[in-house]
Length: 223
Image 1: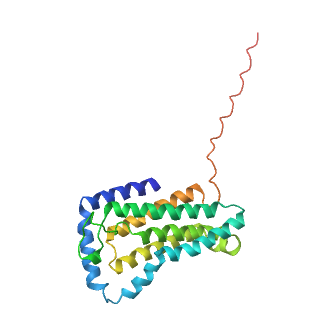
Image 2: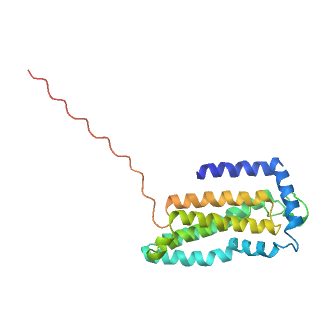
Image 3: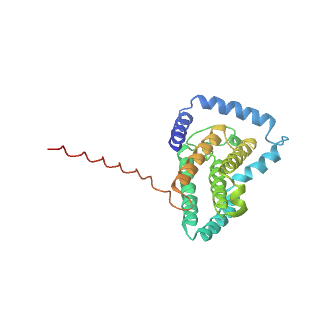
């Protein structure tokens, strides 16, 4: 599934860079947001509140705390190391992609590429999905009541809702084009899937192929 998300991200990025079909979708969405949501609209404040869920500082503090508690609970520094690597990797990776595309934000009044903008992809969408998804994973690993409450299904639903909130919050403020947010969702979901598959708390168990049972020996022919 992570591979499918990676392919979709590449395809979306290529379409954005080539001014393909998504460019028209972005324009129409921007017109709707500009008319009804942004710049003093009724949903301006709710959009600001929703976008907070994807702020790096807001996500980092509880995530680091959850990683420390998980490391102590399981007697391993792996959770802390995973968070540190992800923090640096995502910050650098998203920044390089933003610089490579250089897309200007809707608030600039134009949609230009390679113009020094940092609109594509939405870092808030990436941060929300990866940060809160991993935080919930660590919280569930602490055992007790948290483990019973935070089932796998509930963790995935909560991550999707928070990621959607961050993305729609940025759209509501007209800080991103719609494809910027979609790209952020795709990247965030793909990274989280890879991290969970590798084991954010302990190494994922190796897939061992069972050895084939030896064939029964044939009885020797009688003389």
